[in-house]
Length: 181
Figure: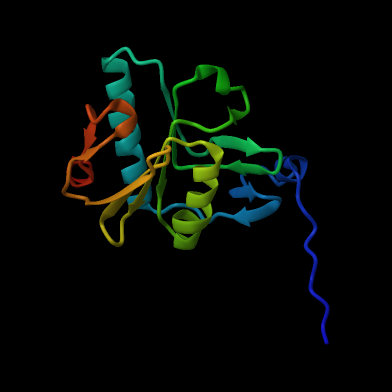
């Protein structure tokens, strides 16, 4: 009979001791390596970031949009690097990371779909993130999760105008249009 392997819980200090340039996240004391994003991933990320940034600036909004690599510290044993992070409480932004739940997170699926669809969805739901998008280039879908007390999920196609809930639907993003620009 074999004994169960007990993994040593990692800390934020372990996370920051990783070699410079290492792409990883610390979730519940476990370090997960991240593969580098591909071209389509980066095109979507840049297009979304610019669209959101322009909306915020054009409406004299108080939120900040931050693109990976940028850390979000959700607890003492969890630091993630969402592809896009929107933070409306600027007091949460430190020189190092976002301290606490951002208002909106966008993850663009690349190598580990389970990570985005399950592990991070649950993490963001319990951490207080208001809106979570999973952009899936292979399926050409955007899953929108509204993580407030009225929890709702809706799936859109890349060709749809996807409303941003934290902006009361005033901002709509069409991924297909971003890709054609």
